[in-house]
Image (cartoon, rainbow, N blue to C red; front, side, top):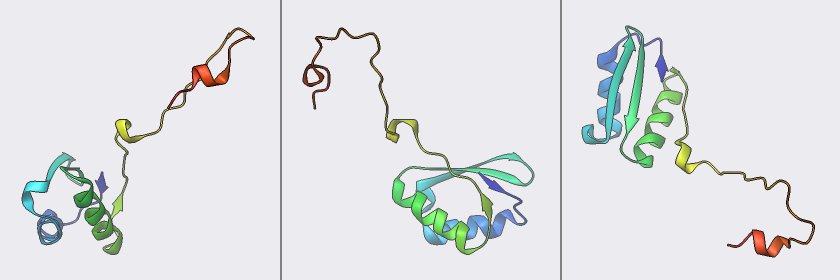
Length: 88
């Protein structure tokens, strides 16, 4: 999400210069906030660098599928071996 956009045309022009038009989509939530969705991680990295270099106010979010998952096993019998629970 990008906040306080003063000129959409400038932002859009910079995005097209950095990444091809097919690799991103821009949606507006209000007149000064935009959400940018990407088709690949390289487009995301280039856009983040562009926003940082031009001092835009923005937030990024991770895709939940790429985040590590923690699992806790409770109430196991004392005879359970860890090797039998955790298998690669």
